Length: 438
Image (tube, rainbow, N blue to C red; front, side, top):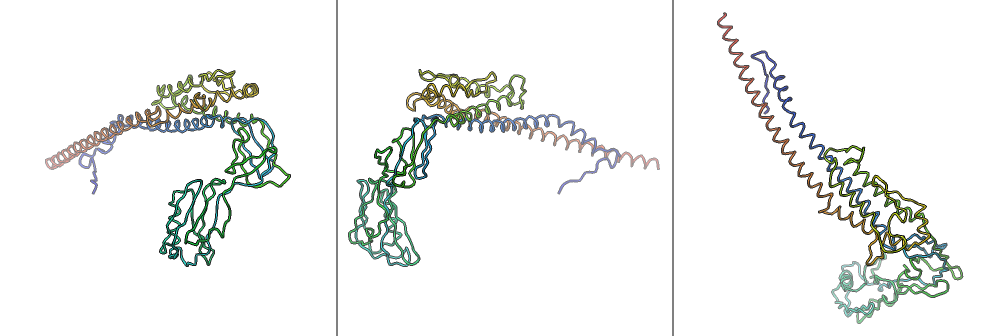
């Protein structure tokens, strides 16, 4: 139960106000430490925000670090049966495409199994043989096996095939389905004594997609056709009507490429501006004293800036500046659209190499920038190391606040004791004086 103190009863002095004033005057050190802690807390939060911006920059750079991603071409189709997309390596052109067959995977059903639940014994005995693309397995089926247990045997066979149960409201069947399309992935089923009846209920066989491109025959194991047209993927969704081919056009997509580069530039500038705001830059005053002139943040922008000026390869264009990405005096970037368009017209392959390298031995600047950002964001990276240092300082300041608070508590306790003793003494003196005077 808390102690209630009435100071100054005996002396008539407002001791509570005196104690409160003295305690308040002694809170100066703890107030300064608390302010410092708030600044450290804010600095940690700012570093987290910077980390998020750096992650976005890394994502933008990673979106340009392969030849495919840099691709400045678009593909369009006038027929929904063929969906065309272009990436790096594409070249302008037009093609007539006819699709006579879609790729499919094997699928079949058993005859009705004559059971009322999937956990009921099937009463079948024999061997269910499955063969796919040169790999085979023979599954022993016992009379006590249920539909569920046979499905489990198929699904654990190690082959690219899956089984599931099907109930039409009155009868149970088992579906058997290949997991991959293409003729080489067709499933061959052999039954010895089991009499499931897969041969009686075929729905589809494993087959290749068949199409012609400008009259030349093309075969594909899947409905995603790559490699036939350089840098273009054809997604086949249906067969085309005979005599009505899909017209696919591949053309330059400068706007799309500029959009990717603008994302890179904007996300980079967001990182640099955040550092300038937090640590200060030129006439910009640091938003937080804890990060003012911070060497870690300075090294972050310096490292990124040094990467921007590197050269790649020996082609006509070797730097970011040469393809229209210019460095401003304050460390931010600017996209020169006319310079970029000119570079793309003169040598698009060189532009691609500056950003993505050759996807083999030579790293492009987008590769390097993404790697630098990744390193800074890592568990032992610059951002985390600085946060760790601030977190240590946070704990130290918390300890100092606790120490100061205990000092103030002791002082307040001592003052109350002293004033209480004084009050009692004054009260006693008054009583004695009154007695003598009486």
